Image (cartoon, rainbow, N blue to C red; front, side, top):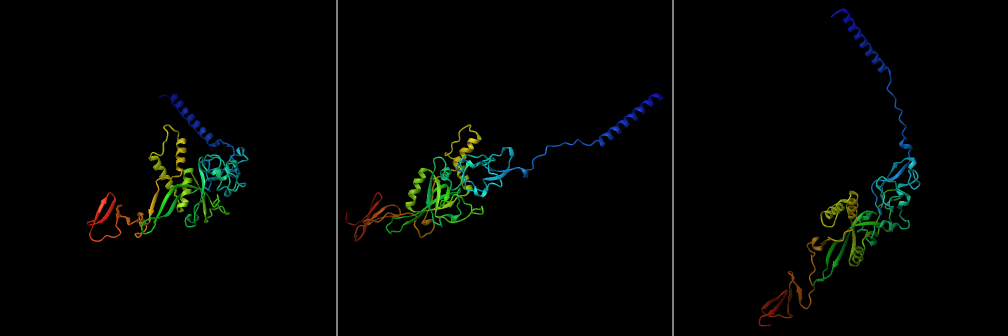
Length: 336
């Protein structure tokens, strides 16, 4: 290689190294571009409105878990909204939803009916439902722990007369299930002055029923005494699963998820007046009976197998028992 080519290569190498150093120096000396983001409004400076934490259908009785305050853009604030600092959430508990509210949607003053307002009870009732007031004792009212919006079962306790010994049959029967409580002693709000649920006893409870169930309750009050048993949320879910698995639910083919959800919610809230259970005195004590035998009349008494044994007024000597169907007659030997 001649000297001319060597000189050219060395010169090219020097230029390349110099260019690289200059480029590195320029990149390190230049600062990164600053992005001036638009200042976002501070959440504390935004107004807070009361919004629904879940879907609230018409007739829903609000509780403390049904709503919460959430930041809301100032440009979208309306006069009908409940604003933080101006509205007291504790006073809204027990109100009834007049128009359906979606989850996350603000609550409006025209969409709620407060306890004591005109038309409150009518707004709480579902379509085709009725309100019935049932008298209960302190012992049968779950010690005051039943609040408006809860669901209960109704139990009828009675004494069934009959039998030759005059002893009545003691029996208790769950006649109605999944009944929604609307009020207790004309009280639709379970909150006290401090905004917390207040437990106190009461003598009357108003429940939501169908017209047919209203008739059954009216008759049940004349038969015996009524008491309540508080239902668990899990029990309602299990009844719904049983209804879906059986023939009680007919979900249309091709229905949208929202339509199916509405159908299922309606089924879960309906009262149940069939499939009752009962317990007799014999289920509690061995000294109580489990059924009522027929009364003894004119020497006729019901045997344990259901047959009637007829004994004549005076029988002397050996007798023969003659069975005619379920009738068993004792006849003396030589008689007719």
